[in-house]
Image 1 (cartoon, rainbow, N blue to C red):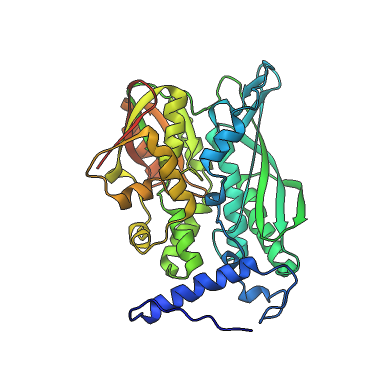
Image 2: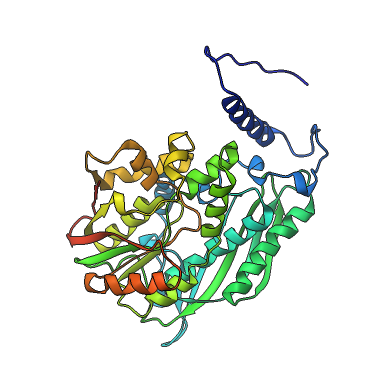
Length: 392
């Protein structure tokens, strides 16, 4: 047992001291080898656990940096099989394989470390996030498999049971069963799912179909990466936490069902590469330039406040560094707004394009269904190199 003393050369508030203590405690927990002594019982009682203390990156913000992912994927050959309808070519949300003339298999895998402290909520969010990839392809999910990494020497098994219960309740809401899975002993808790679904081969939504003149719609607010970082550091209040949990655990099923009645040209969901990153994937794959109105983008009520307080995940900074090469920022867009638009999301909304004339009607239908923050955030311009022009 030892003591570490820090001097910052100025008076500090009790809030700042508490915040620093939370950060240091989290680092110590991450560095401690599994099975070593802990001032509390090991594994800790389930009721006293903050899951975010046991992880470094959080949620989709722990994705591999886009720069490194591009380097890894560039030499992987694309499938030559004509029945492979969607592969890694355009960084889409799921793989699609044609079974016959009327049915294609859609499959995705998604897992990550905790974004919230409550195990049940973490499981529900992870399931909603994995299912979102199926909905973003215009497909119907059939079943799921669990994927879990769990530190058995540091956390009680009750925590894993609660994670799986949250996921099972969410898949039940989606109308599908969990048919199995795979679990390993790990240094950090991780959870996610493989989800399989089906779609008609002629009705697949991809991120490559946006057309000049399309409107760009987003169905959920932005800011979950910032919120999760604030939760980990201990300065997100209960209201902010609950707002984030409700959004992240909300299935994109209803939104997908509603927009399926419209002429959807491109669709994806917003996750670890942030709004600008996933919009960039759409614009590049579709070969259209787009405009985005920063002031229209829906945010959680506390997003700007928490970001200004320093709750910026590393994944969001990586997104800003990487995707800015595709972006022209208007001078009026502040540095804070830029990082928020690049914030690494977990279980974000659907981001889709459709003819401008259908905008008012689709937003009305979404609002009537309770998806009240769905917003027309931008437009597709002419054909081009896939640049994003962001205005204040």
